[in-house]
Length: 99
Image (tube, rainbow, N blue to C red; front, side, top):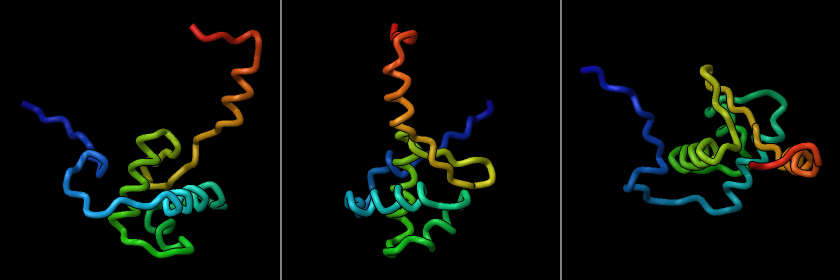
């Protein structure tokens, strides 16, 4: 019997001691959006203007990945993929329709 590896995100754990505040989540989002290169988790964490616990940072990264705002590639680079303006432009096109 082969067991499949399932990544358990910190979002599904029950023993989270502290949840991040909204301003902290927004700070991490802005840091990812404004990064000139695709940083790894450690590089991003060290570059933040306000320091935080690494466990809290991991919770934010897991949330952003789960919500579809970022993508983490196999090398660990974090890429911002959420584009609300692009979605609005696509929805305004008359030749496209939703089924």
